[in-house]
Length: 460
Image (cartoon, rainbow, N blue to C red; front, side, top):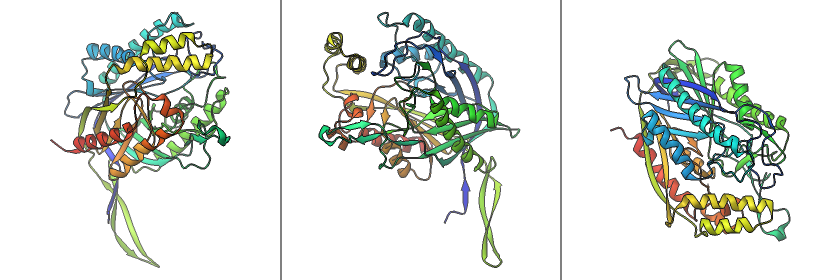
């Protein structure tokens, strides 16, 4: 029987810095095939970029996590060029940086300028300012580090629902991408709390798996979707910056989505924030654990638990490993481009544009070297990749490492495609025909992540 109840904790030097990365009105921002607009005509909420740095108390090289209100990279090459510049300017190693996207679907795409698209004259300057803001935020975070403890606690939130819905018209024999009332979703919410040496709350982190797809083709405003109101609500209540770390949500989204009303996105954000605040308020005091102290005989034999001091772990490790995923036998990028140019259907043309961009990033091989990132942060482990696995992956990992707090993430250091489970490949469903990865890729990724977590937990 467990006689103590500790939080997963890390003590070290922590830095936090934020920049506003809101693009100008008029920038190219079409993210939906059904959209009738190409450029943004308003701002719902500002987009932000926040840097978190973690360094051992004894000093050394920092680990850098960037949380950015951005959607996805059009090609791996676009992110590689962006990251290479960061590596050179900030002297970072590949395993030391995680550039995480919130995955809003209401912002400008991350891509090289394309003069054939309206608003791309603004896009070029905005991408450069995004790079400058990233450098500034990381430098400020590194230069303003403070002695702090980062604790984690697990809660629940009902915002996310399964979005694989068998078509109500059975003769169509397909699965739609939308709320499936009978399916059970993963509602795991992991909340981090940063407390400095003076006992002041300096930041919170919210790790939750739910697609930010509240706002869709009718929305013409730049928006962080529900993440914006989540952050603002958290910050109003705590007085400290809030990070959002998107979980493995390939099959999860709000039940009410695809709207044009920003108020619905704000409602979703407050729902997540209130759940995170409840989890935050359920945490034990920093650097303590709840310990069984014996029984007191009363009308009933009473188990007495008391808080006692607990030294937080200072262990900080990073690991980057590649795993080869099988890729589909798609047409070449040139063939897809020819098909796109000849296409007269606006929604289908956008679908072909995306498929072409993904194909350009695959190369000519039969496998793709997916980068898996694992960080040990004290007693907790952060794990993720650039893909969008189904939530089954994070559920399986958390079951396999039930004695650890796992922060499971999508869309870090690039973006590529979905990872659906193997048995879904016989189904006509969007994540299967969108992804460039063939059957079995999720299972290969799961095994590689499991091994990587075991490795990072093994002390040298």
